[in-house]
Image 1 (cartoon, rainbow, N blue to C red):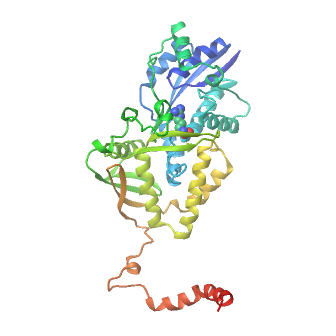
Image 2: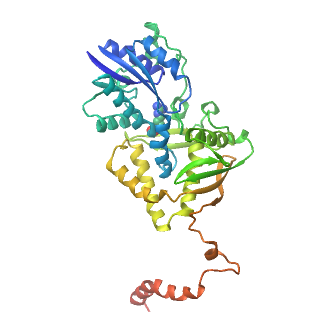
Image 3: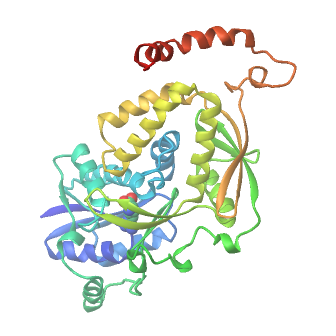
Amino acid sequence: MSRVVLAYSGGLDTSVAIPWLKEQGHEVVAVAVDVGQPGELSSAIDRAYELGAIEARLVDARTDYVERFVWPALKMNALYQGLYPLVSALSRPLIAEVLVDVARETGADAVAHGCTGKGNDQVRFEVSLGALAPDLRVMAPVRDWDMTRGDTISYAVERNLPITTTKKSPYSIDENLWGRSIECGVLEDPWASCPEDAYALTVSPADAAPSQDLEVTFDKGVPVAVNGEYLDPINLIEAVGKIAGSCGFGRIDMVEDRVVGFKSREVYEAPAALTLIKAHADLESLTLDGRFLRQKRHLDSQWADLAYEGLWFSPLRDAIEAFAGTTSDHVTGDVRVRVGSGGAAIIGRRSPNALYDEAAATYESDDGFDQSASPGFMSLWGLPAKRWSTVHRTP
Ligand code: ARG
């Protein structure tokens, strides 16, 4: 008999997956990984036993998630296609790690996830699992069982399974500390605007609280305080998200290119992620060398692609982080962000490591910049242009 460790969310699909895998002759160890999603995971654990799991575990991975996945993403200002802060993409490699750990501890020979065959998440799970534990067999019951949502509900009702969520949600939601992904239903028409009932973390800009100023303090590339109050990472992300979301900032509505080849319309809410990325990138502009920064912006986008495409465990990601890491220690200071009216604007920044030099930049009398050096500079800087034009200009 084989033993399978299942990534279990407590939702309909992974709940039904427990008896389904059992019927296929497997023992099921259900693992719920807490990455900051809402809801009562402990009652989901009780239900997993009722559904037939031989063991069910709740793993609180929130701190690990922030320190090893979210903060690296923030340091790389990670936005896939310039917009999506990788909410779902970042949690998958961590969940894969937990599955492998539990498989090792429980002597399982297989792991299972609840992804369909159309999304990116199956890619992220399976590529990560292949890199971490190539000996483990990977099963994808939801991809294999060929049931519609209605069929899945009937399956549960016929077997009298203790499933509470039989009411059809119009959307497919995935949520963690870094934000919330919303797909399916009316959103499949990219022309249709997203109904207000899809949102949970952000208020409509039309009904939002008046704009607010936030002061975010960074230490070595990561945020440590908000408005002067030092907070642990989880509380800090929640605090920033709450303020920005209540001021109507943090919604993303986009057409995205999936790894599996087709375009999909996606809606996200990520008030904390968008605010912090904006503030972090601004502090980089104050504290890092301009040429380095131009290079880093290319690498930022390449890093986001790797994380999106399921290549978390890749030598290129390690190498990019090593390059960026040479300077993130300097990204220390405070950024003032005004959130409101659907937007966020940086309105001030300061740092003990600021490369900005007021004495050089000022147009006032206490000028520390030697303007007499400029003509000589320009005669050399412009020499190639002058020579080119002398040789090629038609008289
Ligand atoms: N398109 C997003 C991504 O690939 C969101 C995936 C959300 N997953 C879900 N089960 N709703 O990262």
